[in-house]
Image 1 (cartoon, rainbow over the protein chains, first blue to last red):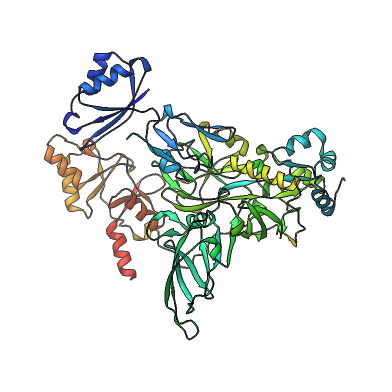
Image 2 (cartoon, chains in turn cyan, brown):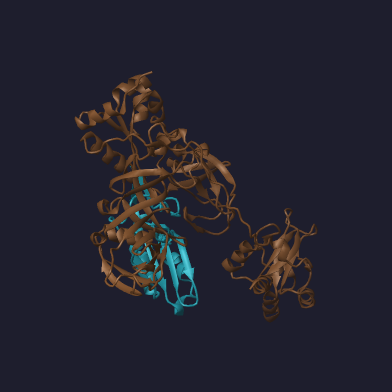
Length: 128
Length: 500
């Protein structure tokens, strides 16, 4: 399960991830992180059984947590199944099935590469 | 040799008893039956392709206004259409960007809006004459309001198309889609086994006047497309059709990020199996069609080929480039190409699509030569400063500061003992180092990933590098990466100022 962490400027200097790992003993991967002067956005992948615990642990530390259940959505009317999204996705969210593009949204880390790369403008990120 | 006539096949189509297969099914039939038996068994092979075809557009006739106007310039939903044809004829090109929404909306989108039945805003300016007194006008039109809306696409249905990758160290946004850094992916285009011209590469059937599936309706081949180059396996078609009869399912506007608008066009051609030669050519497989992979990281006309693969390799989703497995995905839709071939198969089988005798075969030789450039822009070597001070990375920062102050640039290239470029230090880097007081040597503060220019590259490329990376100077290096000069934004602005 993927969690999007929105970290407010006030707490961005705290060792949030380290302390949550120590507290929950959950193993997780940081899939994407962008932190600047104004805010931080981190996407982590946690095993489903630890997901709620990790979510609560971050929330206690003031982090706004969003579960990325359907991180990228596709407009079926616009998609022509060209496949421009397939090779540019770092986590292989898209693949062909009998030359139709199918998406495994669970893999998406919301990097946005496919949104810009889709010639038909058929893709959009949600829950930002 | 087994043969059939076109009229024989057309009669079977009219009688509803023609045997039609798609170009995807044909190779298996020829493998199983042999060519002579395949000619007896199969009457028509249908093909299809659906991809970005930038060289597309529409002639539109607006009818005369009252008082009449001789349109010189016109905009459709703020996309300029060419108005220099008589009074009220326009040509709208697919790749023209809009004046208010940039590349997110362009000529292709206007075409899609028209075909989808949407109303568009027309603005026109004209030259006032005794017979055309009106100087400008505005109106709102739908597709049915035009006298004619005739699609004329100068270059469509490429026989095959070079695949693209990039060795650049940043992501490139091209008409071949997003190309990830350091050969992170390959994009390709064309439908391979279903490609109309790959199924008739020597123009046994396809010629001037051939009836085709175009954008969901029936259109025609006008002749060879621009840059038609059959001798190198890159034939193209110029095609026409009535936009009013087309369908938005087979004409789709697209925008390539950082590049611009384009139009996805659906084209299909049914090919009659007149003889064994055509049976062989329509039995072409993905693995028979070679596709060079071109390095778009080199921003020149003659880009190097990094590997040559086939459509079979590309369609597997991964290709081998010098021992590296690189993910590959298409930009054209094989799903839609297949749908077009099936749709045509259905139309031919039902007797709704008759085949045509070409008025003339397509030329077997074409031209796709480079542009003759009579006013060449200077190369970096002609503009750069040759006196460039360099430093070794073990010198101290105050020494570097003195070199910059006594030299002519704010940039100090750092070189190895052999004079090869290893880094760069700017006056700003030194100010920062002094302010923080931590760094001691140039090697502590230098940028190691240096943007540089080559002596023989046109200055336009150096200008683009400066712009892309928001920097003001580039060391110029020779083939051995030795620093031989420096080119700065000052050089370029001075040269432009002199030109004016």
